[in-house]
Image (cartoon, rainbow, N blue to C red; front, side):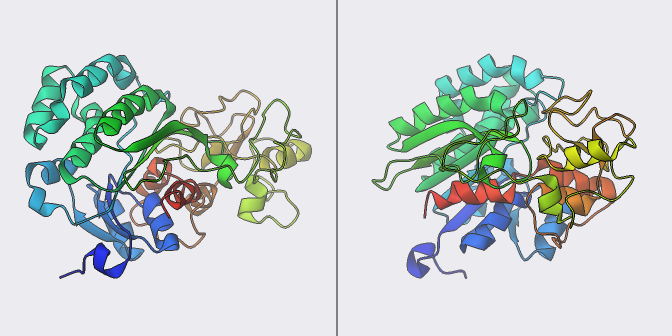
Length: 344
């Protein structure tokens, strides 16, 4: 039987919708992470990376609390497809229903009752999962909480924060830009951190300048420059191999790789990402990029992982499509590490 984290002085985390991004950060920081992950390929990746998976379905833990391992830290990155600007938007249209369910106290019910309440409100099951972290928090009373989602979900995290304050937590909520924490990508995410240990909750302080697409030479005072794709992928001369960029202009090739990538999402066309502000591209959505579009860049799954700030040799499992899906759905490990450091 595993020793209690209170006996070993090791912070123990329950990571809902785990994937591997938070897990990589936890390993770097010496946090004992137990994941809840339903995707078979992601579970296989976790095993290959030396990560523990406690059980598979988030709803199961709410229906049977005996499945939940003891933990001090609750982490959750619920599915974002319905909330994402790249998706069809059913979650965005349902924000009012989600907020009403939070206000109703539906999250106090067990997993089956919570899911039924969400369905009665017209939410699909994926959208309803955004309520599950609050249900876990109410049920298990962790000392620390970290939640991550697309920026559209910020009003939900703000409402969750109000509830957590009533439960005795200090809370900080905001939108973070991944390139400000060393990630070679301009990904934005709504983050909530909460703690109940007599220390004021705070979002992590940026370690790098924001990337300004309209003025790339502009830097935030006192901070080093963001990391470019070329730097992350360690191209010796700062330029990708010939043919890696769609188009024949060497100057355009150099310029594209010397920026951070735009947001990598799980549904994007394999082998294609884009630099922010590229010709004919949308800075925050690579899912619609075509390989023949100017500004679109071919990358391997391994390179996409590096652009998410994974180690170059991280052992993603499954088919090429499933590896890309795991990478695109993950929180960038460097961003996750910055968030988790606020609890240490």
